[in-house]
Amino acid sequence: MTDTDVIDGLVTQLGSYGVRTSQLFGKPALKDVEGKTFACLHDGALACRLGQGTQAHTEAMAMGDTHLFDPSGQGRPMRDWVSLPEAHSARWAEFASAAMSVPH
Image (cartoon, helix red, strand yellow):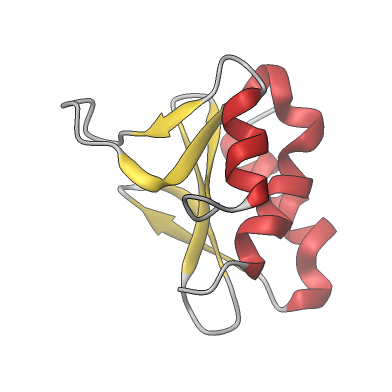
């Protein structure tokens, strides 16, 4: 399955909320109706803006194999974003939906 297939699948699952595809750091991403990016595919994982301190962020970080999203790989993670590896892909739509609900 390609990155485009994955993003298109998430758009289909979340489409009733006005989600559309976009790009973030040159990678396929999801935007909400206000044009704010809330999730993207990066290095085989889905990174979601869950908001540090939220229940979804805490749960995602406790799942194992997850980490704060560091798109540059330079040790400067985005504290509100969690990278969920493909091993957790069955829950990607759930976390993408949670990310869509986090205030910007």
